[in-house]
Length: 101
View (tube, helix red, strand yellow):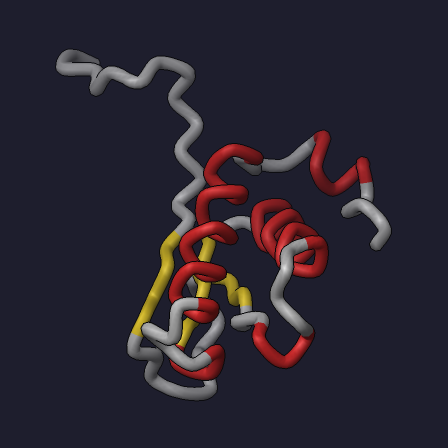
């Protein structure tokens, strides 16, 4: 499985640990029978994150027919999912919430 294009990821917003967690959660829902693949939808606001999640889904244990779609937040879904996994691309390097601007 080819990696996402480097130029897409280097100059864009993406978060590899978050993308890995999204794939882990989607895989758990599908493999444990909590939701059928067509009941799961992954959404993210950035194309680089979308590309990374799709890449990780292809590398996962999920078969092609088991992989949920990964849409950009502004794209209308083809159906109303039972499970929506949002990847907002957290970019703050500190795990703490900043209380003052």
